[in-house]
Each structure stands twice: as structure tokens, then as C-alpha cells.
Length: 115
Length: 111
Image 1 (tube, each protein chain N blue to C red):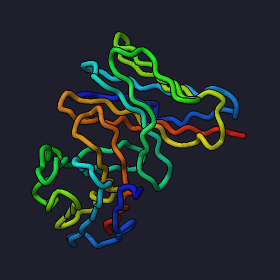
Image 2: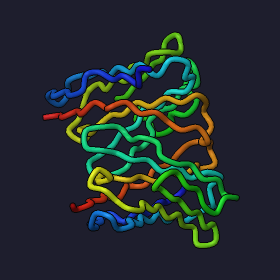
Image 3: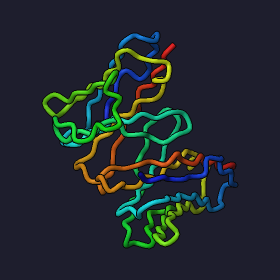
Image 4: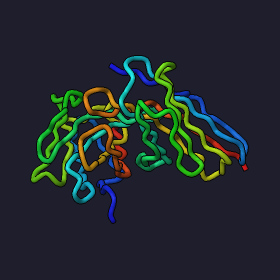
């Protein structure tokens, strides 16, 4: 069974440029998460989807970040414009349900470098 | 909000010894606590979940304890192997049906 797929794996952009990350969760997983992970720190939740609905986006910087999950499957996270401080790994995860009881399956992440 | 503390310093142990990692939290006791393993360049991988009414959980060479009085979870790897070298993250449910992750502890097992 395929795991969570993310692309690209690496992205280097100049500041003020836009960037987008794509995630394909495990088939049948209704809940999808986007996390940000800085070096030496744990993942921090940006947004959580239950099917196509964003149920928790309180940590998403809405002035520059946006996300969508059309049809409740794939998801895209966008940053526009990117800032130097956005350099980090962006992780996508999925789970069968939205309870904190459910284990989360993570993708390999996209490492973003903003110059 | 929940504050989670894991030792940010790497833990170095000899192969065959038991590794013990600590996860402390400061506020309310979570209903669930999860442990994940993360290798460089990869996403975290789920290892174990323990409920607040469980004192201990085992899986092969792994053992997790949960002490709601001390607000602490301990993660043990017995008969450690170099392949166990990784960063281990604890994650707690934060009453909003979400997981909050600690910063992780890096374990290095020397042959």
C-alpha cells in the first residue's frame, strides 16, 4: 500500500516568490494535516482537514498561506509571497479519523529553502 | 496550551543497553499520548499509543509508561541496536482532538 506522497521533495526559491506543495494521502483517510517542522523541533500543525472541510486552521498564517483540499483527497499548501523565515520542512500526514486516538501517517516532507 | 518537554540533548548509549527517553508535560493530562520515530529526511513514524488509564504499554523491545501524577511518560528501548538511532517524538492530545508534538530527543546507539 502506498504511503503519503508529497512533492516536490525539495524547493529553493527567492523571497517574495510563490511556492506550492502537493500531498496525496493514504487512500481512504478522511483526515489530512499539514505541519511545519523547523530544524531540531517537533512538527507544528498548520491546518487539519476532515474530507474537504478545514476544521482547524488557527495556526495557519492566513495573510500569506493558503490551503485547499478539493474533492477531499489531494491537498495543496501555498505560500505567497514566501519570506526567509518560511524555510522549513512542510509535512503532510493523514489518518483514518480526526481523533487524537488515531495514528497519523506522515509523508517524507518538502524541504523549503527561501533565499 | 499544553507545553511538552523532551530532552533536547542527544542521548548516547552503548549497544545492548536500555535507552530511556523522557516526555514531560505541564498542563492538563491528555487522554492519549503517542510516540513517534523520525529518521533524517523522513517523516515521523508511529510507534505506540498509551491511554491515560494505562500505566504501561509494550511492543516488542519498546515499553512506554504514563504517569499522570508526575505528568510524565517514559519511553524505553531494551537491548538497543545501532538501527534504533533516530529522533523520538512524543505527542499529546490537546483537548481539541489534535496532537501537540514535543521537540524530540535524538538517540545515538553506538556499536
